[in-house]
Image 1 (spheres, rainbow, N blue to C red):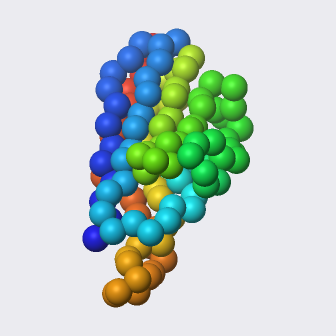
Image 2: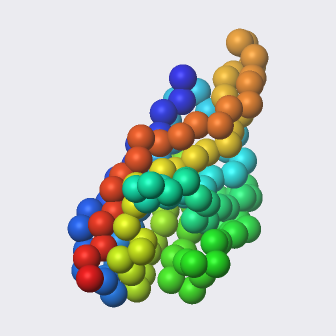
Image 3: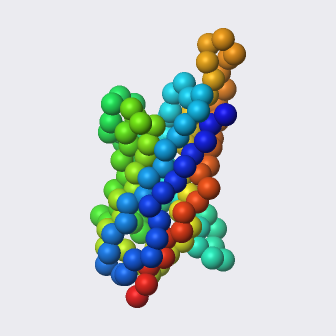
Length: 128
């Protein structure tokens, strides 16, 4: 089993900052892409940012136009963790934020399988 645990949401004033974290644990063989999505009330879930790449850190990042220049996604492969640094927050950034991880789970003895796992969501509220 693989689990994602998110943290870092909360209430912040417009112009403020928050940092979200999402840690993956369990029988993980390798992690491919990691990303953050958000869903505001009455709206569809949308991609905020994603990052690919292996090694000890880093990766290739992709951002929604609405957050470019304000949000930064990063990952720590040693900790199986993805972060979302959110600066210059706006009221329209208010939403539930979900992390999603694409990975290969399992081990040699029992076999491997490809999974896409979602976090439980964390609420970000930006007041004007």
